Length: 396
Ligand SMILES: [Mg+2]
Image (cartoon, rainbow, N blue to C red):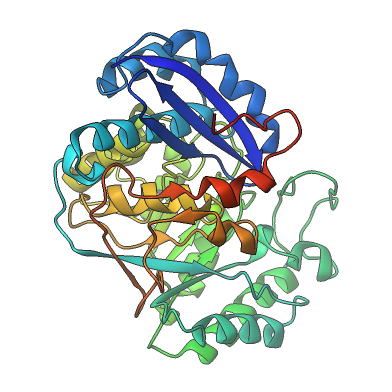
């Protein structure tokens, strides 16, 4: 089998990758809906993979993996990797999880990030209301994550939140020492959320990036009585193109609250310091940024060797991204906690694909399905109407 084409169409703001072969099998992958601008970046890799056998996934990856980077520059490589596993599974007539070593669980736990009920305002009451609504969702999520501190509106809404000039117009550009008022407000919002959730649902907090080491330690210690699932990305994260493992270690060694990072990190090599220095308790690589699903599996195994847990990031990875998550999550070792449940970027996304369970989430879990490859396919007649101008031939 040979790769004959690499295509990319932005469908509902989300770049979809299609790897085409000479045997009538295609594979699909997906990039976060926040990155429609990556289409030309996907197509940059076309010349590197044409003519290669897509079922030799690792050989294809050797030709393009070195041409990626931290978020967002690992997304294209990651989506191509997903598409290769999709092809390899379809060609063999087995689900991708079997090619990744086989599943060790029949259902995978997912966690819910605050949306679609973001806090309206930055009061403790608004935060409590937001997580309460998420708790009442019919999916029955057992872990809910919410943004606080630099990963929230608090920075702008609470006067004198921190000792620095408020920056706007960029994605979470703020960093600096918290004021006492800012610190107390953050703790008050967490307390309100915990009161709303009780001990039936775990609460995780996305906190930055942008906190200083000393504030990160103080916050993690102040929150110890609340049994938080994890504090995510306090120092680095999102689009930070580096890791700062030594600083994370300072924080992690100082508290019993679990410390989490890693959604922006590309490749297993960049997790090495975090693991070997015991710098965090939990990592959260995103299969659509880290280099793909086999890369995620490798990171999880290496984390497990070091007693570190994994909760993959993925809230805007879309429905093909969801399929990729489920395939790999089924195979991860027992340090797996839950994956961040991705939803379709628009409601109609659910009408243009087939293969997902209905309902998708039951009691906070997704049953692992057994269709070949990623096990999700486009309903082409339904999907075609959403192809943008210039990409009408995406499925041809
Ligand atoms: Mg995050």
